[in-house]
Image (cartoon, rainbow, N blue to C red; front, side, top):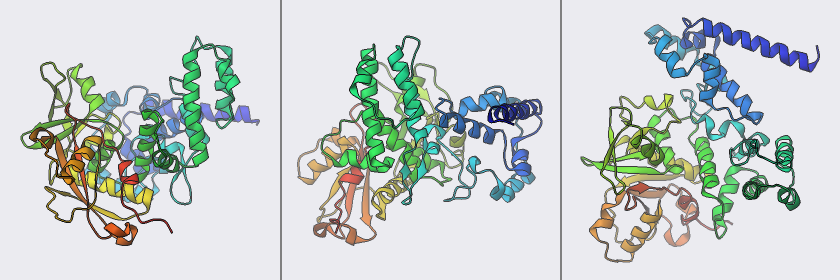
Length: 448
């Protein structure tokens, strides 16, 4: 049997399996997992991963549509039944035998579900230090972005270059090949993307590229690429967690948040999602955000993660439609602290403790850093003894104390001293956390 025939036979067998599963709607996913170690969702993850590895823009939801023959939410409403105690016990007992793609057997936490399948994390591999090594599959994913993928009006030169890069995403590209494109916007898009690609390839890992950008003067990289790198590295940093609060808190490292202050609570909702829902009648019933933009306030319904409802996050982990409460002593604020600790550990190989505090009452305050631009300015002014009006202080959302577990990793003049952090909202009630500040502004000891 030649390779072409073998591929056709294997594809036909796969389609037969899918057709059978679509017919047997009485067979529950949990029973498939318990008996065979995989289910319809595993098939969808395999499908999406292979499609992306071949340069196709197929996400997990689209893959589930293929496997289920309808949107998953519709299938779930029609056919999924609540799992009983025996099924749940069997699920836990057989978990070591579940397919790796299921995410049930993360090397860091045996209970960890998979999340953020469209981050690009599964297109990368880990190097010896556990950092994310750049792969051809990861580079091809950028070539499938709408700004780059050819359209009907694309000229032959543009199509030829795109095809060559899909075949070899590391291929060197000279100015002449870009100048040959008829569309000036396409030329600009390719120059920007290839400059980013070259930095990724030269760095070798996503982490090294991210650090290099912020440790050199003048950040010229488009924010989109910065956020995407933060997204996929954050996915690596919290890999293995089974805490939905932690995963939701981690979204702050790469997505802007809208803030609502209500009854003493500090509620964060994804800014893009809040704006979208404000024009589409909202959703949910467990919590509310109020959005104001110079017009009368609009009420947007979104689900607030609570201890007894937090599991809703997993099914909706890429909708960005849950609200995080970061009020003092709430699980959301603790989760953010743990994420920031893991971020520092991953990049700097430094163990730190980050804890919320309600005020800075330290006569020997020697070092601080803001987790966002507003917080940096506020802390600087407070440290210098400048007058800070009530309006600015009201925008202060959280204060933290950071301590190095090994003081020898700190610069000698501040060794053993606490470092104070702050998180603020802007005048228009937005939070744009800058995780890079923790990598470039901590007082680290000089490398020997």
